[in-house]
Image 1: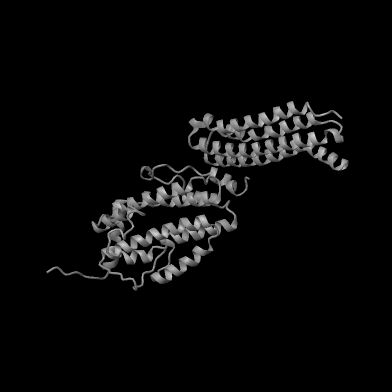
Image 2 (image 1 turned 30 degrees about the vertical axis):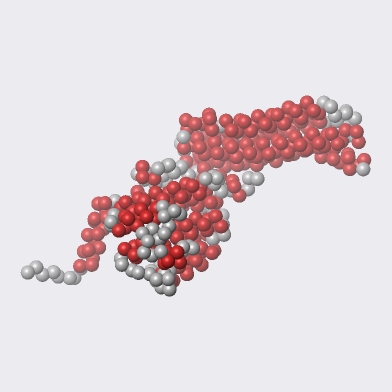
Length: 149
Length: 228
């Protein structure tokens, strides 16, 4: 049982980073494809398309910070706490990155046809980012209650 | 999560957006050559499905066969389409054609009985035959446009009928396209809408008169008319 707990602890430690990275990969890939497609159809504004397509990369950074915050010697006493916080924060970051990528793809597609709505079209992606920030901040806050050893 | 729904993000983002109103359009947003270049991004199976759908919905790609053979051939192609959503879209168009054919045949004085052969598409063939004498084949409540189309056919107003049908098709594509933004059905709907725009923008009165003169000249070639 003790070994299983330690394994779960290690999974929880690396989960925010790994799941955040998976989310960012998928999100940036979807938004990036939309940006490249839009470049084929427009003559200007390419820089902002690329900029928007990079928005889902923040989740992996949050994941890294959560991972370092959770980083401590894994023991039976703290493994379950690390597992719970790490995995749940990881999933929140992963889903937010994926759906943010989809929001970004739609924003790029819409603002390509109507450049004047560019700012507004990015708002849904920013709102999704807000939820990722919630998951990130409260993972940091709650990890303070996990025993150091 | 992002698989099928975002499969053609690059392709669809590279295509110019269609206008909201069909009849305000003066030319297709992209040439067919450019469109075909972009469609090269489709996976083989999807490209085959799109080719089937276009073949089913383009008169120019139909072979000259009798009704029964056309229906049989179309049904074989229709069954080969893999996506049920796209099958529904195609069947909707084929059924629309069947209803228009029935309206024209009735205008031309044909009388269909329940036992008479009538080849067409959709589930309303029997219904049409049963209500042959009614102006909208008894479909007023279900398909309000049928009465309008019937009146335009009876009054011999082909341009208004064409506008009615194109508008109907356009609105249908817009409605069914909701919720499909970067997937394969979105690509198909884009191409079908492009076809509608292309059809509308290529109507040219002067060209039509020239073409009519050419056909008349070709038909009368070698025929001498004596004026008494």
